[in-house]
Length: 134
Image (cartoon, rainbow, N blue to C red; front, side):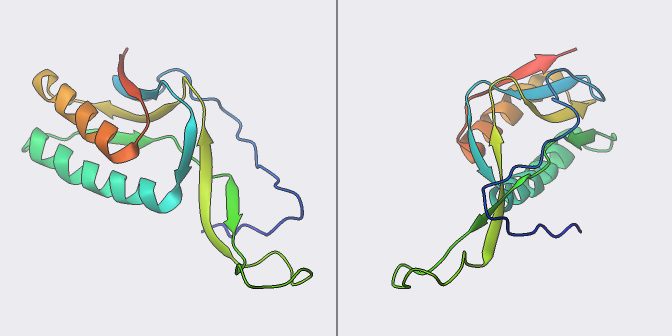
């Protein structure tokens, strides 16, 4: 696990790929609105999604690829603390998601279950998303 450092300025680590097009799977979930996503929220959503897709696919093998890399650290200092006490400890990682970024890619999901996966993710993430086919 890579441990992020606290930086003086809000420095964002840039990724090498933009993930605007499908690379691995046949079906993808693309963000149509921008917003910030916390690492804890993403982990819980991903775990629930794995359970749901395992239930949908039955005995078949469904593959899932996650394309998010969290690149910003969030620090927090007490409200009562005075100035000059430092920046505070890191409490989470986050990712700013722009429009057009692919969040998850799938393969071998039944067509009649794709809408259910979309509505499930829309409720969990709080972002506007859409399905993208190859």
